[in-house]
Image (cartoon, rainbow, N blue to C red; front, side, top):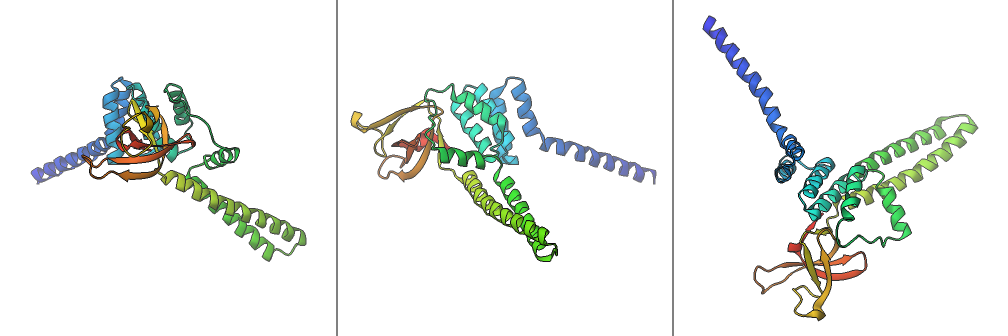
Length: 265
């Protein structure tokens, strides 16, 4: 009997140790990355943050931390790429936005703002919240519409019925507006047609191939520049069948770039 009790205690102790240790191990990837970053071991931090993203899932905070590690490691293109990924998941990430603007000031091809006033207003509205945030807000607005509609139907007071009617109308239009913005925010979050140049420099071409002469050279761009992909073409009959992207730069210039020189956001 005594031996049996001792065995149970040993088993219980082992189970307690396992239950204590394994959750800690599961949490160590991001924690180890943070520790490596604090110790100025940026290459290790980058490796661990990427492993955490692959194994535990991504988040705006993780992409922000990864962007910081890439910047400290001297990889400005990948820093910009990850700051933009952080902002795509959470447009309200002020730290990611501030660091993105800072790193953009360090690259050769400074971003050019060619957005119209309408586009700027639209961006500011959409970026007020995440896609989920807009969805929840829209749901709340619609519930208020239902509430005031019920008030209009069931309240006997003429004054309260008029107020309920106008408030229901306001919240109906607000709900419709919320649906439109929610869809736009979700589409923006899922859109993967923006990309960042990661090569130190790359010569864009007027056709989906490396320029043969000056007449086929379009633009010379550098690491960290953002482009928007509008088409793609895999060239047949060439070694390794390279994939080329037709892109626009600053909503003006249009040219072709080898997919190996960029990474989609």
